[in-house]
Amino acid sequence: MMQADTEVHKGLEGVIVTESSVGFVDGQAGRLVYRGYNIETLADNSNYEEVAYLLLYGHLPNAKEFENFRARLRTTMDLNADVVALIKSIAPKAHPMSVLRTVVSFIGAQDQKSNSTDLRDQEEMSLKLMSKLPAIVGTISRASKGQDAIKPDPELSYAANFLYCSTGKRPDKEHEKIMDTCLILHADHGSNASTFSALVTISTLADMYSAVTSAISTLKGPLHGGANELALETIKKVAKPENAEHVLSEMLAKKEKIMGFGHRVYKVYDPRARILKKYAESVTRRNGKEDLFRTAEQMEKVMISKLGEKGIFPNVDFYSGMVYDSLGFDSRMFTPIFALARIAGWTARSLEYIRDNKLFRPKAKYIGEAGPKEYVGIQKR
Image (cartoon, rainbow, N blue to C red; front, side, top):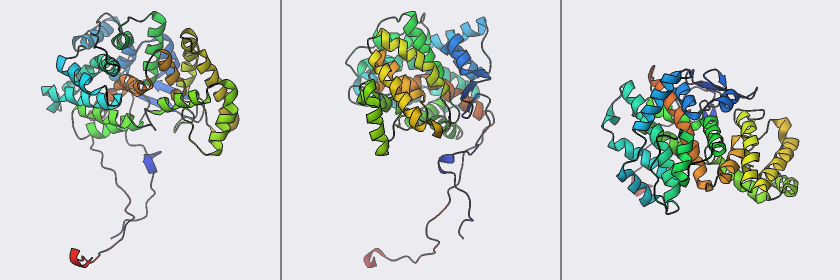
């Protein structure tokens, strides 16, 4: 019997699959909200550790809660020698996201609690991963260039430790603030593809390592986490502000996708892009790459004049790539930095979901032959 006609929502667009109090995206108003706080408020006043606590536990921590949280992260921040050896063995040839995916899975395989479905154990796995990611991503960055690993410093913040583990230098306050802001802006973003991937995995009562491995695998794609790499490539292709009109018009005429513009949810200016734009201007100026920002600025003007009325505006990927580039990161590291931030959202939403768990089991509309067909032996086909 054929299935009855049903409406198909490709990519589950517009389909509500769960409830969440972690955060939401208001695409029409251009708002990103974490637990009731506008992203602008958190970017201006908070730090990544506070925001991670907020997403995980539902409120901003008081002084004692904050110090206890940081202490929990510090206890598991170091990488075992075999983890460092694994990174050094594969990072020189593999894409950093492939290395990150493998390392998270490897750490999970070493954890005897990874077979537990207990909520407290899942939370412990979440914090263990969060604590290790600055050193993991920093070591991947260094190993890809043939450099030795840097041991994380428990006195540094999450953002500063990542920069330290990547460069071997303790960052100044300006660079630390810029990185902290980038991590806050990427910490959560509704039911995006990688978050949904994590929820599907955790709904099977798999462990948090498996859920995060699924999320990392999903984030690797250029339509999700890899977009800022391609956005930076386009900015460098344009090269100069005076080239923007010609190059973009040519790309649009060929119906080429211009990465860094437009969003599946936002139909107005992405609030994260608005915040990052001011940091992009300052960090490119400081590090001798102001032409990159001026080119991007002109590209924004051209694109808004041509497509703004269709709801096409810069998204967070347009400016994040040039910020990371100005901080000295290779473009292949942009998506692992995204994962470094999104670990808070992935784990917060996964922990929330399994408190009232239901296994995901969507349906697909069958459009094949109705049958039944007669089987013909292989000799007669």
